Image (cartoon, rainbow, N blue to C red; front, side):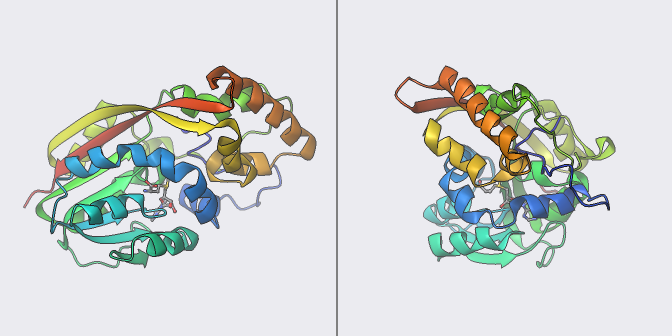
Length: 287
Ligand SMILES: C[S@@+](CC[C@H](N)C(=O)[O-])C[C@H]1O[C@@H](n2cnc3c(N)ncnc32)[C@H](O)[C@@H]1O
């Protein structure tokens, strides 16, 4: 169920001791701030208005933005007049977020270990973060406990069925001779949840949230063949890590595979419109 963008990846020379999913996540995002901001921050920004609406974020809302990355959600919430606190586990993400959103308060923290008292926030949101927790249920429990009774909790996740934009790198890997798939762990099946609207609704319901609502957002992300390659060349997220772990000759073949698949999505002038889809879900913390 996980995809190359979800799952950290290493070469066959990966460490002998098996990594947990969460340990692998720390490695996957290490030093990724600048590359993430260059490519994926813009992609992930498309869902932010709907996410903040679902969490009822408005002026004076005390908001926790979880896995803030380079601060896209934090900045949009500040623009609504919210009082924003944000956390991320990766210092290079926070460096950029702090510079971008000086009005918000940022903490280096890793879910589920949160430096907040219970019932601190009016709303808690995470944009494409729930899919990066190895234990989503315990992560969700910790996050819900930081929200006040009546507070809204809202997340976005990638769906199980990837649209053409999200499928681009996996398709290129599939047709690349000698490509070594991920040696890092996928989420344990027992901890996983279906990446569908129903699956997210059930997860939020199991966490004790009421008034659970889900929706789907579709968009086309405008980029170029060269810009999209930056994430690969800089080793960003699962696909980029996987690429860096390949032998040089396999990397060269992957580049050709990428250009072939990208051509199908390109207008012929180097620009691309990548179809993407996200699942959004939200609920209310009970008293
Ligand atoms: C796909 S990025 C999303 C960033 C941001 N929300 C956005 O919309 O651009 C995922 C982020 O979650 C962070 N992250 C992943 N697992 C985390 C955890 N357990 N605790 C805190 N941050 C985490 C990563 O470091 C990364 O910055």
